[in-house]
Image 1 (cartoon, rainbow, N blue to C red):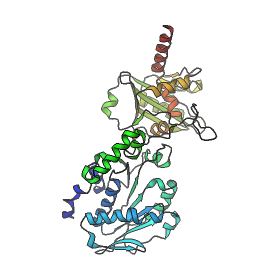
Image 2: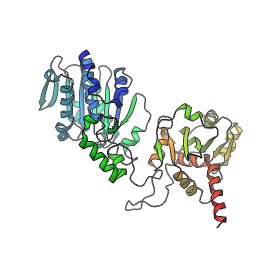
Image 3: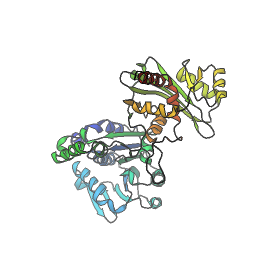
Length: 421
């Protein structure tokens, strides 16, 4: 292993150094590797699996693709590359039927399986040791999270800690189950994004770079999706200006005035409390916090509001004056949003006109999910209409309420300009 450490910088691309250290420290049970073409995520996963097996003589690995006949030319070849690159080629026996790589000194295995029928994984057993590493390559091929859950429940049994790798190019639509799952905050999960720009040029070659730049010049949206691994949308996203990124405490504290909004949940709908900062000069709204909960008791809801907003004004859904009165009785500075005819359309278009709507998926996962998946209505043929759906928009409604003073100011300015002509 000492000899291997000296060569890792030539095998792991710089964007993955931090992830490598986290894996060594055993900090995460799930490693989500998303990114564009040429981002070196599959190479990284293969190297980490071999390294992990060499460190732990009890741990074997199992690698899945959705369809079995894609294994040999993809993950099987990728693992052979990693083994040879680490100088361990002579130590592994290579088999194709069944498809396995066996570490001769200990009998540890790297097993390859198709997930055409997730239930078949129930029969997977090892003579000794346990599956310490799982890898789902091309995660977007799988129908949904239930397939993954079934396989993991069958494979991860006994033994020590197990690490599961998921690698994929993000689908174009934010509503795809993989994109929605990656936005969730889950204990023990690390989501990492990479693209070809962080990979040494000599690893990719001039021809690869030229193809990427050619697509960038011809079709920027396709380039961003294919090579940068961005979720560029189906063309029906309402908020094309949404930016999902880390927001620091320093950035949050830089906003003097904050804007708070609360959309009440009815039946199974959630209560959505949001807190925003607004930079008029940069035309940027930055989300500073959220609370999201269904059937929240009034006392608990009031406590959440006071904790986040203190004595600041909280603009609430005017459709429920009783709730506003109850919150005021609990010392929440709650007021009714004005709304009015056309307020929904005007508020959404105001948000669309901003240069950026910035949300941190780690701090505000529900807002990140709602705003990124909010799409225009479709007709019965699947074509997008110029209409905003009144569903799954609790954060959007609360956001409009919170920023009502700023939105109203823009509306007055627009009216003043019209009077001049």
